[in-house]
Image (cartoon, rainbow, N blue to C red; front, side, top):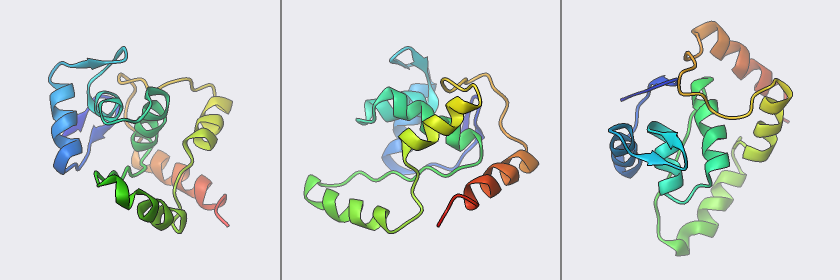
Length: 126
């Protein structure tokens, strides 16, 4: 699927169905379509949804899972072992650059921009 401001993305399952429905015209929290429409409808607060959408626009990967609540602690433990993104930290980094929220009309990052963005975060990892 293609998302305005993000470009082509691979999505499957419940999030793809939700995003496709949002992109077809639903408006969530004042932001239209795509990730911004799908995530808040799935329980992610809108502020974090903007950070995640911007991260995908910049070449990042968003992984979501729908699961029984009894598995939430186990899923959290698995994510703790990985290089996951803290949305508050990432929002702060973006804000230092003048960013305030995802702009669906912004051009997707070029391959060179994506590589520079990824390299910047590689140097931040322990």
